[in-house]
Amino acid sequence: MYQTACANRTTQYRALPASKVHSVQQKRLHHRCNIFLKSVWQTMNELDFYEIRFMREALLEAERADLEDEVPVGSVVVFMGKIVGRGHNSVSTRLDPTAHAEMIAMREAARALGNYRLVDCDLYVTLESCAMCAGAMVHARIRRLFYGAADPKGGAIESTQRLLEIPQLNHRVIACGGFLDKEATALLQEFFRQKR
Ligand SMILES: [Zn+2]
Image (cartoon, rainbow, N blue to C red; front, top):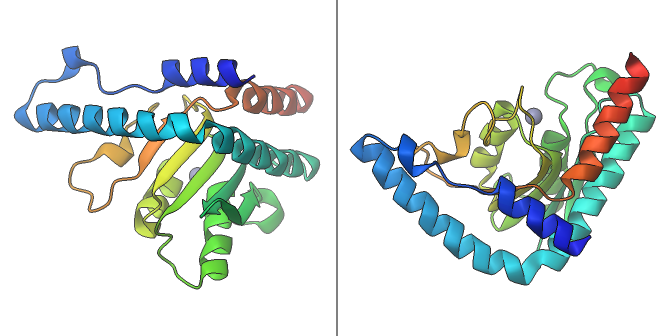
């Protein structure tokens, strides 16, 4: 399991391909991303145990969403090795288009820490985040984002755009996908299969 997660991660974890880098600004971004990738990679090797552990907690949240007949996506926010916020997708239950797993987990974390800035917090989510959640993470100053499965239709981290890499942003969230992505995908596939 450990090795599978690592292997998945290396395939998901990538910078902008050099062949697509054209402008000076893009070249700078490409260079900066690679530095980030290298520095994060070293830190991440030390933290593999926590990544898997916390992603499992996010998966538990996704299962809760499933039980509520919501699209199964779950999230936790971690500060100093402890979960300070957790949430699962509840858009239908709450009649709230912003009630994505990450938003709920960040709201809970902000209340727990008494600060709307979630400095030094890491967010774990089972599915690649959308533009709304990625934007909220920048506002909240989330340190690192770990996600499970990629979302080709709505993901704003690597799939439809690379929102967190916009150079004008005043905060950079370091993002890495592919953690327990098979489990996250299986949950989603089963949910939509039953819907058909
Ligand atoms: Zn979202």
